[in-house]
View 1 (cartoon, rainbow, N blue to C red):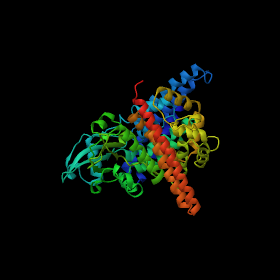
View 2 (cartoon, helix red, strand yellow):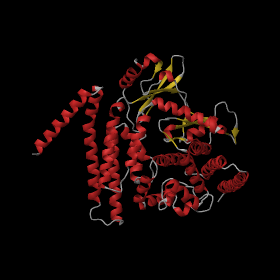
View 3 (tube, rainbow, N blue to C red):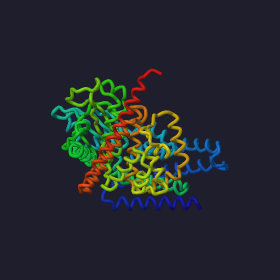
View 4 (cartoon, rainbow, N blue to C red):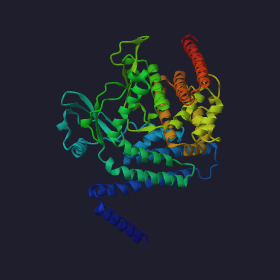
Length: 530
C-alpha cells in the first residue's frame, strides 16, 4: 500500500511539474525551480523533524529548570544549531541570509544558535565560478566581462550570501569593484522563501513558544529588494543625500562608493573601489592614524542621525559592510589622531520609519538614556510592546535588566563587555524566552529591524572599545533629544511653548555637561596608578 501511495505521489508530482513547465512563460526557469524544490523540501523536512525529535527525546522525563534539564537543553540547542547551520550551507542563497539574521539576534534566539551562526555565516559564503559570472554578464549585458573592462580579476576579493565582488579596471583606467549576484538565486529565491516558511511554521506547530514567523515575513519582503542591485544603488545615493540635506554638519564624514550606472544592472553593480580598513580592524585603523574610539563615536552618531532624524535606515550594519579611512584632504588632527570617514557598503536592506514611529522611537531612547521610567513605559506602549512587556522591551533594547535601566546614574546603560555582564544577559534572555517571543510578535516589523540594527552596532562597538561606551549613549541621547525637540517646534508654535522648549534645551545641555564631566573623571581615574 505504501509503495502504491509513494508511486502515485511521485507520478502526481511529476505530472504537475510537467504541466507547470509546459504552460510557463519561461519553461527553463520553471524547470530549474521544479528541480530545486524536492531536494530542498526534503532537507528542510528532515532537519525540522530531527530537531523536533532531538528536543523531545533529550528533555523527556526531566523536570523543567533542574540542572539536568538545563544541561540537556543546552546540548540540544548546540546540536540543533549545527544542523540548522549545515542546512543553510547546503541550500545556500537566502538560507545563508536567514542564518546571518539569526547570528545578529543576540538574546532573542538561544545563545547557542547565535554563536554557531556568528562563527560561520559571514566567513563561509558560497563562491560562484568564473563561468557562472560570465553567464550573468551574458544574460544581463549581452557580453562577457572582458568586453566592458580593461581588466577583470576572475578570482573574487569577497563573497557574501547573495553575491561576490571582483576587482576590475574600466576602459578609462578607473579601479572599480564589481558586485555580481550568484546566478542560481533568481531561480531558487521563491522556492527558498516557501521552504523556509514551511520549516519555521512546522517548528512553531511543534513548539508554540518558538514563533519566528515574523523573520520569514521579513525575509520574504526584503529578499526581492536585496536581489535588485539597482535598488541598492539608489539607496546608497539617497543615504548620502539625506546626510547632505538633514545632517550637513557630518555629511563629509559619511561616504558610499560612486555607482557606475552604465555598467550596472539588477544583478551587476559596478562601484568605485574603496581602499579602507574594515570597521572592526582595530590594529589596521590605528595603523592609518585613526583612533578606534573616534570610529565608535562616528558609527553611533551616523546611525542615530539615520534612525532619529532621517527615518531611512541601513539595516545591515555588520562589520563587513562598514569601512574606515582618514578623512580625505583633511590635514587636521586631534591629539595626534586623524579624523575618520565611515564608508557604508551593501545598501540593499533599508527600512523607512514613518514620522510617528520615528518620534516615538526617539522619545523612547531619550527616556532610556535619562532613566525616565514613565516616558519609557509611555513610548514602549506607543510602539506596541503593551503595558505588560514595556520593561522587557527596554531590556531587549539596552541589554540591561529593568532595575539597571531606571538607575539614575549616568553610566547605567554601559556594558563593559566582561563575562559577568554577558552571563547576566544570557540568564535574563533564558528566563524570559516565552515573553521575548510574544514581544517580537507584537512589535511592528520595522522595529524588529531596528533591534537587529541595534545588535549589529553593539557588536561593532564591542570590537572597537571592548563594550558599549558612555560616549555612545551620550550621542544617542543628544540626537534623539534633538529629534524630539524638532517635533515640538514643528507642532507647537506659541510664544509660551517656544519658551518651554528653550528651557528644555537649557536643561538638556546642563545634563549633557554633567555627563561630560563624569566621563572626564572616569577617564582620568583610569590613567591614575592603582
